[in-house]
Image (cartoon, rainbow, N blue to C red; front, side):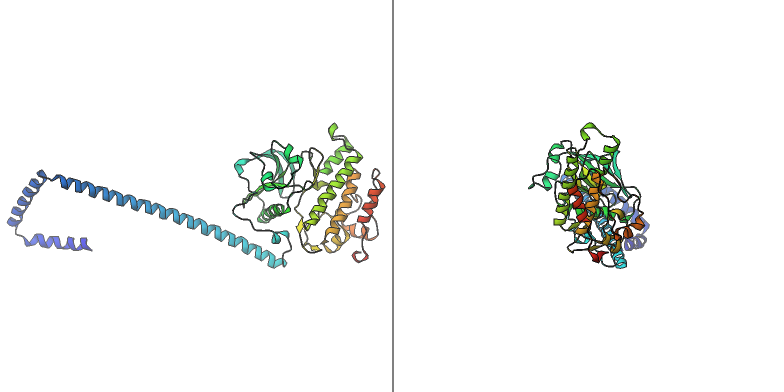
Length: 397
């Protein structure tokens, strides 16, 4: 506004002076200016320098404040995006639960992830060998890997006398479970739930233990113990075909030892109120010193109730108890039934149970009182134990 008034007033002021007066005034002003310029006071120069420094300081301050405001705006925008994404995931979960009723999955019983997670592994400390695939499933694969530095299992289980297997694993070899590319949101939720489940599981020498995890929302990784001999089913079948090393020869004592170790691991799971739901030889892993470990907790559930009722899905039909086949009810007793089927696999060196029976006929076959026959090398005492595991109350028939 000041500059507008000045620009409007200047022509009027100039016009009010006669031409001759203006000319004399201009010459006088020029003479005065020249004289002042030639007699500049040093104090005036210092004032000008101070004024210039003040102007530069003010400009720099304005630039710094502007940059800080820009960074603050970016942080607020990022925070709002993360908040909106979390709200979206929460709404999606609520819609799924409202569509199928109240959830009974173990994810509802597990503690929420905190900011400082002792299980978290930095990607720069984890080396994944994608050329050495240990196994593959419908939505995930397992690769061999190594951890740089000391294994986190000693920090997470510092008060426990960890098994000799960990102490001998000087190379920090691990198995890394990762999702296939282009998997959906439901699969990512499943593996994140499995990670949370294994955090709560705790340590046991006959249960596959978690080493660490990478809980990236888009590419979560589950890091567990590396069992060099693979799963028990393949180890047993290699005994029949001779496709194994001499030191891997198994005798009856080894088969009985595997049976006891699995039962010990199952006893630990039941003491923690976990129902495995998929006890089978394919889900038992063997270390280099023939230690058996129960693994694959994708179907495992935590429950404080006697029974767990599933909402369906892909289930191991020929390992399931009659009440599980008929009413989709799972309990410690249904795991005991599956354990007896696993004993059949062990003492037949990997035979498939009920080989000639179709899955759709399993319920009627069991209701008629049929059971698996005694394996040829199975001791009578163990088969008697298997038969007791397959006893069914009349209410379940």
